[in-house]
Length: 77
Image (cartoon, rainbow, N blue to C red; front, side, top):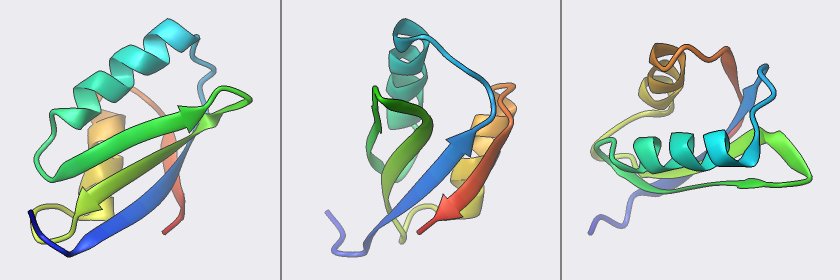
C-alpha cells in the first residue's frame, strides 16, 4: 500500500438516515484509492474519506458523491 494517504472532509447537504449513510459508505469504499470512509452519528452531514493520493484525488471523490445524486462540498483536507 502507498504511503501517500490523505484525508478529505465532505459536507452533505442532504439529511440521510444511518442505514443510507452506511450503504453510501460501503459504496464509496469500493472506489479506487479509497482506504476508509466514515461519519460521526452526531454530525452525519460530515463524511471523512481517507484515500491514496497516488490513485485518486479529493476532486474525484467529490465527483463520486455527486454522481450518487448528493449535493456535497469539500470542507477540509
